[in-house]
Length: 285
Ligand SMILES: [Fe+2]
Image (cartoon, rainbow, N blue to C red; front, side, top):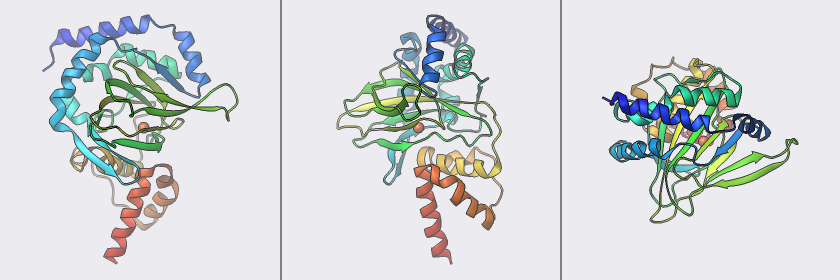
């Protein structure tokens, strides 16, 4: 069980961090960049430190994943964080942080439901070549989904968050930015708006990133929930992640057609799953 004082300490340190910011300037920058903001060393060392202890303790929970042509790396789900990482959980549930983010994005943000393994998760880049290709963090919720990335370990010259960020007022003015995620550096974006990737890790390098997800509506339709489950199981946390979630309804032939046309095209992992599904159906027939 977490010590009450440590959770309280994390909150008071986050209150201090938020109060030290020029919020109107940040608000302007976020919207000028089409809902993207980089905040270097935003999370104070006093909060990063207990998180670093927890990522070492969670080493045995890392699930390695590999999607050919799109990604490879390790992930720890929200289920493990809920059970074993009280400091990271306190950061995710911080009222000060959530209020700050809500004002930034002009929407009342909520945490994801507890059965979403991606609500608050860790990405471990530990083997040469670990990376993820360009993608959106598509929202399968009924409302918008916002991604917060926080650097915890940055011992790499090669592995960088690459973001295609809008500059200026014209929608065509886009600049590709390569971002080192030093401990405490935070990135905030609307998942449906930022085209982003992570370049491959080099030899003898290590990088660990914490992701926090917030939404404006915690509801998700059954079909989208099915695909969110599949994406999480195959591309991030392994089949065990499915055991924690309510069963989705059986899909019909019409559902499958709709999935292929409307949803899979927007995410490389889903495109890979579509191919695997088709191959499986061909073998069965
Ligand atoms: Fe992403």
